[in-house]
Length: 75
Image (cartoon, rainbow, N blue to C red; front, top):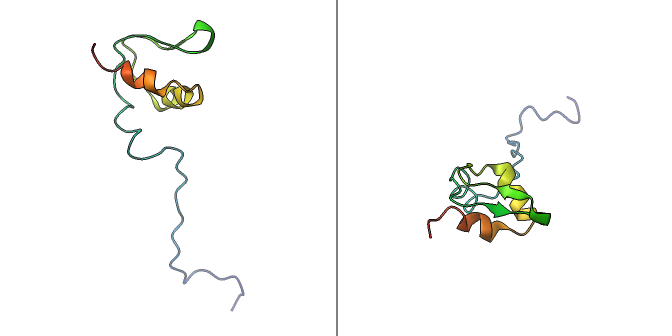
């Protein structure tokens, strides 16, 4: 028998997941009702666009999550 034979092992590989469960799901998929500016006045998201995971990650890196979430609510 081979020394590294794991065919009888019950180990299950853990899937790689880059998103955090719980607080990401409610934001992704919503539509922005107002523009959110990023750095140097460039738009992070514009009115009418749907928030994607990429936009969420960009807002997280720019510390603009509050503004992104607030852009999905009507004032």
